[in-house]
Every structure is written in C-alpha cells, then in structure tokens.
Length: 190
Image 1: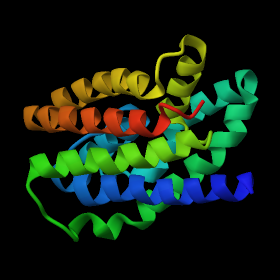
Image 2 (image 1 turned 90 degrees about the vertical axis):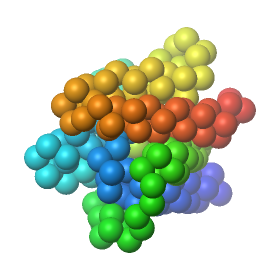
Image 3 (image 1 turned 60 degrees about the horizontal axis):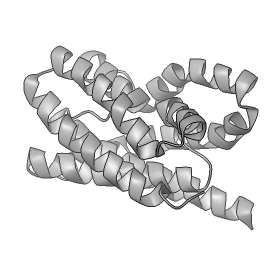
C-alpha cells in the first residue's frame, strides 16, 4: 500500500510541479530556485529543455546520493525521471493561460511548492537540490522548506543578474510561495 501511495505522490506531485512551471513561470521568465531554477535559466537563455536539464544538472547530486545516501537515491530517482518527463510533456500548456506576472509568480510558487512538498512527504523528491535539502534537513533538523528557500535565493540572484531585474523580483515571490507550501506539507511528516 505504501508503494502505491508513494507512486501516486510522485505522479500528482509531478503534475503539480509541471503546471507551476509551464503554466505560470515560463510565460513570464520567472525562476524557481535550485536545480529547477538553473534549468529555467538555461531554458530562457539557450532554449534547452527544462526537464532534460533537470536530469543533467541533478546527476552529480545523484552520484553523491549513490555513495552516501543510497536510500535517498532510490527514493528520488523515480521522482526525478517522472517529474522531468512530465515537465517536458506538458510544455504545450505554456501558452494556455496568460495572467498578471505577479499573480503568476504566486500561483507558480504554490503549485511547485505543493508538488515538491507532496513528494517529500512520501520520502521521495525530484532529486536535485530538493534531495540535497533533504540531506541537510536530516542532519540539522532544519525544516526542508527553509533549506530549499536558502538554496533557491542564491539561484534566483544569479538568474536576476543574467535575465532581468523583474525576473529577480517575481522569482523572489515565487520561492517564498514554494518555501511556504513545501513547509506546510512537510512540517509534520516525521
């Protein structure tokens, strides 16, 4: 039964994450943080596939997980592959809805945070910095949403410099929303 619940969490979480990215973030060149944010930067600058870049950029973290945290490796590999595939499959939704950039940054953050939080609640993730944040959280007892927020802030500062100041401001709103909703879903998970 746990296997089925975890599988459903990965699928639903991946869909929520993908909707947040494709429907709300990419139409306005808004960033999330972490590996997703770095993948979005590469997409905005070089038109690379977001899901594929998430896999490529997550590879070093998964190598670390293989040697140091094998349980996390196996628990997150499915989340990484499925969420990356769903992000690229739902690319056509990028033009489906057009709303105000500020509202889009809030809604994108909510969807991404719910997707990540749901997966983390069932001890899986998209890997990348979510996986790294889970490692740090386990070692320090700092809520994983707070750790993700700190990592995300560094990524959007880089993106703001490379893309535009408006990207930076809207992305700050997004990562705040991601952090809040990830924290809400993970605060009682242990």
